[in-house]
Image 1 (cartoon, rainbow, N blue to C red):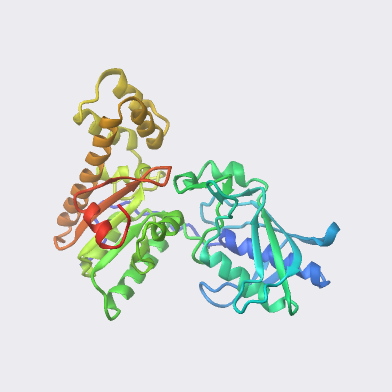
Image 2: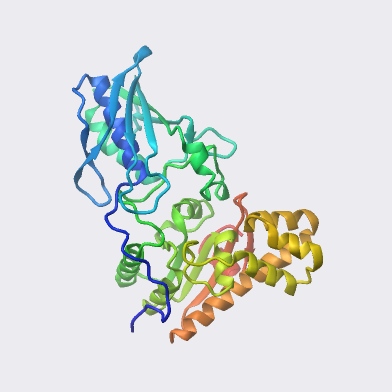
Length: 386
């Protein structure tokens, strides 16, 4: 059966992909290390990209020795033809030596957040994905002299401003852009290649020995980072991007029996309105959906108008929390229930009835704010914290 739904929006081919932010950080760090080692400047650095494996040339713009034992490497992000807010983002990496820990297996790389790099709320810890750390280790550790470690301070001069256009705050990342990513090449959420990759990964998991029929669909890199912190097994996580409808059908066809949708309330609210491609360039309707559900819960008059006029779903629900917390809780619960109902109906229209779909919604404070009648028990069963 073809998993593409009738009238499902199809995005045009966006053209060649460039590299994700971790690759440009690694390139700038490699340039800074070269300056410390006294190597001639090379504007094309060969990097091991890991995901996918292989060496590729990555451009850097400058490298120089500074005072007090520091060196600077500079790169400029190029995401290719994809729509990505990192286009043209300047990346600086400051590097200096430090004594490497003597313990076996200790990481000789110290990664610090400079201006514009996102940190965990309430701490100074840089938000760096596992892929970004592995990428830095693979490209820097072989060049380190024995007994020496490397201190890296990453600076994104425009990172703080650009972070305001992301959902970082929904996952507790503040002050800048998170250094996240799971692979080298940019894949936009609306890119049909991203759907194809997710389908391929889903098929591979379903064919693997021991597949138990469980899956957690998360939206975006931040979701992939947050889900394990909530107790969900990393082996069950699959990045969904914005092509949720076709991916739900593909999951059902691959014998997924229990599927958990794990996402920010401001994104998943679209599913409650029957919108199964969630990129804002193709469809929105969040204010309309939220207002309709609030009216069904009894909100009326100026309060309903204020809810509709809020700039974001997060702001609308936060405002309702302040004025009528009991109604806000009921609205979130109705939202989760409606999402589950819409997913069931969507699958039924495609002839798939064997997959139970649950929904769990978070707010910008990294709290679980709602779970549907399927999603709540499923979160507990799969190991998440209610």
